[in-house]
Image (cartoon, rainbow, N blue to C red; front, side):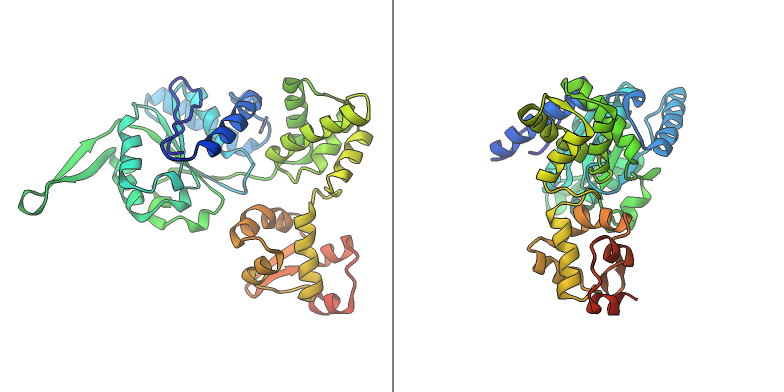
Length: 353
Ligand code: ADE
């Protein structure tokens, strides 16, 4: 999938490669997602500091009749980077084109998109840290002075052209701000980290989603699901559908805290929101490496996951909740993890305290 483009602020897909299956899945997900995805700030729950900053920037941009500064969002997956970009487009009354860096392999991919932008449009590039050097260098003058540097001809007829493009806003999203090159990072005027959601915020997200999807639940039921959603709306919105299924089959369709907890127990999501992989990660550090420290590559091999998935998906929440600690010598369990999981073997204690 090369471009997910949009004319009237509706997200569409532009399939340019042999990836029909991926596209079908993505289209399905997106149609479900786009129903529950907030379109305005007043529907978007959480990320209060970010919303305040953005509201001011948007109002100023509108008053100055200029596009917004380029924005970089970073933080763990599922916290709403794409969603907030779409909200910005709605609030700015403009179009958004959504793509991701791995789809921008060839110079013509990025040039193609940049040439189709209209004044004020938003270009959203997900996983922007994965942009290759050539595409990145095409972006520099586009971001800074709104032109493309191109060459035509060969040898003595080689000419360089400066093609102006309309003033646009680039919104980049990444799970790894540190992996972005300095020159690219420096070209963003607004850089903001998305934070994990509190249980109360997630409760509201779940209540909102339940209303849209006609799921019956009481407040305690919503809170029970929120508590096990690891601070992540994407997970909360996934779990609520699984809990709904359980409530329909095993109960009267209404999600109470009791029903939610029974469903989540069956899904093997514990009271901290940890799943089997999280627990396997913790027990490998405890059992095989005496509580750590252990290098991320070794851990990935032992777990049978790739390093990127551990770093991007599992680790941020485990670190945030205080189960594991990153040290220069590798990952280590905390005393808190030992307490929660009854890991008081002599070996673990030795390395931890
Ligand atoms: N669905 C997913 N993320 C959301 C958010 N932040 N607010 C409301 N609904 C959401």
